[in-house]
Image 1 (cartoon, one colour):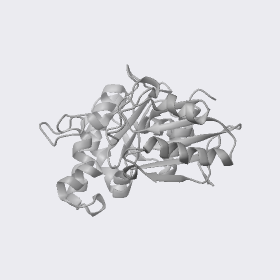
Image 2 (cartoon, helix red, strand yellow):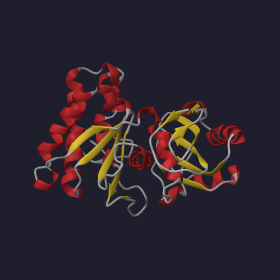
Image 3 (cartoon, one colour):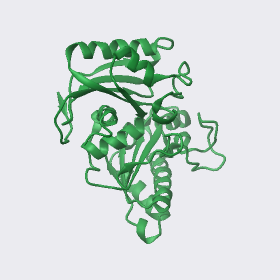
Image 4 (cartoon, one colour):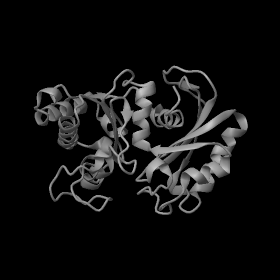
Length: 291
């Protein structure tokens, strides 16, 4: 088992992470111990993804005792994850994921946006423990985020608050999957870098990495000045793969934007949860209202 740090005893939960390209399923204890992880490729199941997810989940339930299911899923979605419409899963439009899973698995199911779930996981198991106001963000294939203020994840009217990937950072810029242009996700994500350069993000040159860091930093700085936080915890293969130089440059760019006194100390810090973050986030969704 792998582990994250967290307090609490009691029954384990089943955690399901439905991301941009993969689905991962594992049993997670309240202390953050992750059991064997089952995975499948989203692209391999264009029409039967739900059945495949249920099969993977059922195999784990046969071997473990759990009392609830937590899901982090790509969005957008309606409040409480009642229906989901992930941009990367065309077959799921207004798909009733929460109730369908509950009916199939026979357990209570809680669903949250994947990046917002990670924000809960960061607070329960990661660098945000004891921090009441912070932004948690992912810079990977896409860009997502979750905002915690006064110790609570901000939901917004439809439960999609915190999605900073759709802040416009380049006026009239690259088209985004959301229908807009110049969104942070369309300009600084791994997918955007690959479309612009024709190479995978890991092969990006110094100029491309600096550009992405500057755009991410400016978006975070604007939010810090608007919403009054100074901690931003960053995960994702692009941000962490680009290393300390990326976060240092992004922090400098954020501080150039956030000039008001209360926001001047804004800092982008790496999430310590690593590859375990999405599953720990999904588990935190299951235990959102449990001490």
